[in-house]
Length: 378
Image: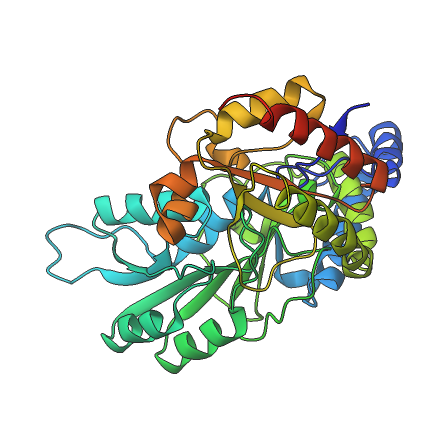
């Protein structure tokens, strides 16, 4: 029996999503920008997805821009706020505030903007409990000149829920825009997005297809494209929108509307798993003590390396991860956990993320695998 405990990396596709995509592949495969009947049939799937995403995100469909996923959505939101500037312009670069808790699609963009001279980046402190330090954020904002603050809704590695509403209130009081990377929140936990100017979504995190996501903005917000080409998506994201992926996204977004209720029930399994693991002779330390989403635990085992544990558990039929999937394949420990708790805890960490189809039997199999692996000499 194989057990999948890596839902934060990607969620298994919903059967209704696969059905919707199969139907669209047969009936709506044309270019949705074409004005003939075939194109109009494809366009119906695209606009149905736009409406479903808007309903999920409590937005207007006109403010939903389709992208290839959460990474592109984050890039579009951030780069749009920092257009290229000449090094000899004599104008000081505008300020971007974020933290090392963020996904690489935020931190690497921030670093690149600074290298290009388009922005000055200020890194707000991360607290040991896994949340952004609001006092440090307020200190940075008080220095004036901030254009954009980037905050995640839910940390993908620890599951810690970030203080989005408080960050938005502070940022707006200093005239700054707020972008929320909400990829890990939709369909899993209710988040107060009050005050957010833009927020991102990735279909495959809500049991939809990979390769499609969205950037959602408040009405009237001005954005600038990152890619140049045709006039699709109001000129903000050129390229042909895939009606087949759109059909899958629509089904996933509709399913995600009631997701927080289903995920709330997963907390019982997550807590049982965490309690049992922390009671083993080789007890781990829990990373991220602030409020978390109900399906994630992040644990560090002293004396082990996270990737070694991942490989050993994989041989026992249990899939977990040692960090964010977008950082997989690197030899470095998680930057998120380094910022929170230091190198040692980061290097020995595992993330276990359950889902709405995880069963008590899955937890039992996982616990048996952990007990077998951890009984070996580290």
